[in-house]
Amino acid sequence: MKKLLNTLYVTSEGAWLNKDGRNVVVRIDGAERGRFPAHLLGQITCFGQVGLSPQLMHFCAEEGISITFLSPHGRYLARIEGPQGGNVLLRRAQHEATRDEAAALPVARAMVAAKLANQRGVIARTLRDHGKGLVDDAQDALERTATQLGRSARQALACPDMDSLRGLEGDGANAYWAVFSHLIRNPDFVFSGRNRRPPRDPINALLSLVYMLLAADCRAGAESHGLDPQMGFLHRDRPGRASLALDLMEEFRAPIADRLVLSLINRRQLSPRDFRHEETGGVFLTDDARATVLTAWQERKRTTLRHDFIGETVPLGLFAQLQAQLLARHLRGDLDAYPAHVWR
Image (tube, rainbow, N blue to C red; front, side):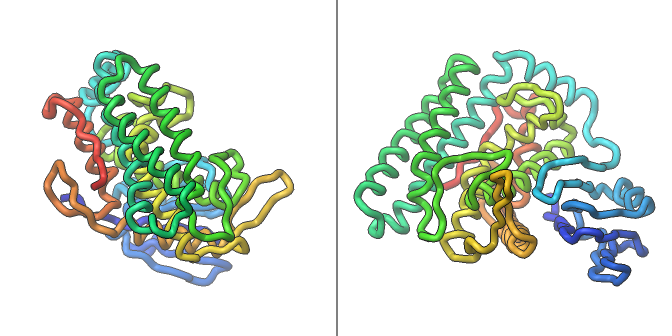
């Protein structure tokens, strides 16, 4: 079983990272602020103006530690990594499968069905744990949406073509976001719908940040198993888009990312003061709040759960790696179908 490695998040403007032996050293204003053994790291993610020495970048490429650069608000900028794993035959099989709808459709069906079922699971969990505290209208809306998502998940497995599948996925997403506000039990926060680029309220700011972190993990999972992160099954090709990473994200959005956001808000780990509103209308987390989210994200990834297909209990942070591995096995012909993961 692959070991769950840590991600080093560097959020301080002007930080400088260098190599000292087999350690990554973080300096701010010339003073050492942290020292991290390289063998425990799988990724380094830098927000804003963060510098790295050439020696460290060379070392990370050799050791398989990827380096991702993001804007201060979390927009993806660039990624540094060493030689790609896998082989050309696997990538050729992936490219051929994604060009052939007959081959791509079963994989996309599994991903969409799992996404819809997992969205239903988040709603069902709220009904189970807090149903008695909900007003009647909210409970009825959640129950109707859970029923709709369950039905849509079953329909997804029999969709005749990709356009119908994408339409079903879109309808499910609209229904899910329409009742998402009922999952929020902190009256200090209001959610009126999903928006982005830029996010225009605190809940969407949180969702965008956590989805970015999830996308980075899914991309790393795809690349570590020799897959092309740009070539997806469900998401259409677009220059600069990591379509396969977005595909793999779908089954993880609700149970990992959305539940983390709800936990941070409902447990009052964040307050409205943790967000700043810009003149452009965008809403972003403060530096301290972002650090809180990153810590919670790392803790969430260490939570263990049984993976039904492999029959083992593993950290959530390895699920993206496992699903990418299972997809690679399907493309090689070792598995008859891609087994998307549905949370129980």
